[in-house]
Amino acid sequence: MAVGVSGGRDSLSLAFLTREWAADRGGRVLALIVDHGLRPQSSAEVEATRALLARHDISSEVLAWSGRKPDSGIQAAARSARYRLLFEACRRHGILHLLLGHHADDQAETVAMRAARATGPDGLAGMAAVVEHRDARLLRPLLAVARMRLTATLMERGVRWIDDPSNADPRFERSRLRGRPPAKATHRPSAAADRAARDRSLADIALAILDLEPPDAVALDRAALEGLDQPQAARLLSRVVQALGRRDHPPRRDRLDRATARLLRPVDRGKSGKSQDFTLSECRLMLRRAPDDHRLRWIVRPENGRKGREQAGQPLVPAAFFACGTKAAPHLK
Image 1 (tube, rainbow, N blue to C red):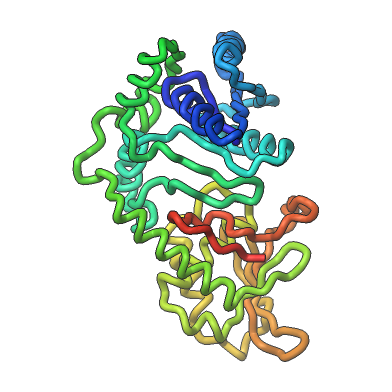
Image 2: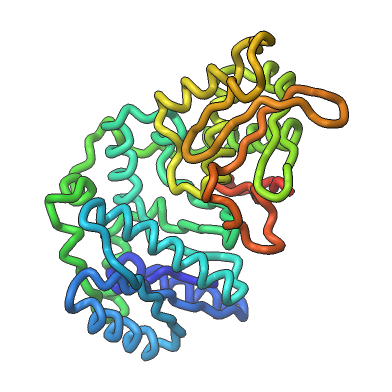
C-alpha cells in the first residue's frame, strides 16, 4: 500500500497506523513524499521525514515537483502536481491502493468551503472515502477521526512531526477556516451515503447508454438521454467530460446546466450536425448519426491538442471520479 506523507502529524499518523495494519496481514507500506520545492527548507524537511520513517522501518520515496512554478494559484497547482506524482508512483510500483490522511476536521473545512460556493448535494457530501482513479484506488480511512486523536497517536509513540507554515497562512481559504468551520456546514455521513447511492445508479446508467469510441471519445445515445431527468443527465455529462478532459474538478454549475439543456433539447433537423456542436471543459460535443443504424448520438472527445494522453492498455473511463461506498465500485470497460 502507498501512503502520501508530508511530514505533518496527519499523514505521519496514517503512515504509522497503516504500517501496523499491513504488518499484521503480511503486507508492506511505501511512503510517498512530495517535495514541492516551494520553500528553501523543504528539502531538509523531506530528508528529516525520510530518516524518521526509516527508523520505524517504513520505506519511502521522494517525488519532486520540478519545473517552473506558477505566479498565482499556487495551492491549486501544487495540489494538481501532488496528485499527479502520487498516482504516477503508484502506477510505476504496481500499487493499487493510495491512502491519504484527510481527517474529520479537513472534511468539515471542505464542506464549509463548498457551502460558501452554493455547491450541489455532491459537493456538500464532502470528500469521498473511496474514489476510483485510472492509476490507483484513493482511500481516505481517517475521515471520521478528529485531528486531536491523530496528534495523540504520535505523542503516544514519541514521534515528532513538522508543521507546514502554509497551513496557517491567512491568504489561503482553508487556513482562514481552520479550526472554526460554520456549524451549518458540518459534514453529515448520510450525505456521503446518498452520494454513493447516486454514483452507483449513475454508473448503471452510464453502462447502459455509453459507447466507447476509440481512441479518444465517448458516444451518448440521444434517445436514451431523453429517458433521464435533468439532474441525472447533468451528472453523467459532468463525469464524462471530467474523465475525458483529465480535469481535477467538474464543470462550473452554470456552464454544466447550459450544456445539459443543449444535450436534451429537441433536435433542430433544419440545422446541420456541425452547427449544433459545442464545447464544455475542454471537450467538444458533436451530434452525429451512427454509421451502422443511423441513431443520433452525442460524440464527446477532448478538444484539439488534448489527444494521446491515455496510457497504453488503460480503459478510457475506468469509473474515474465515481465515488463509491463500502461496496466495490462498478467499472466502465
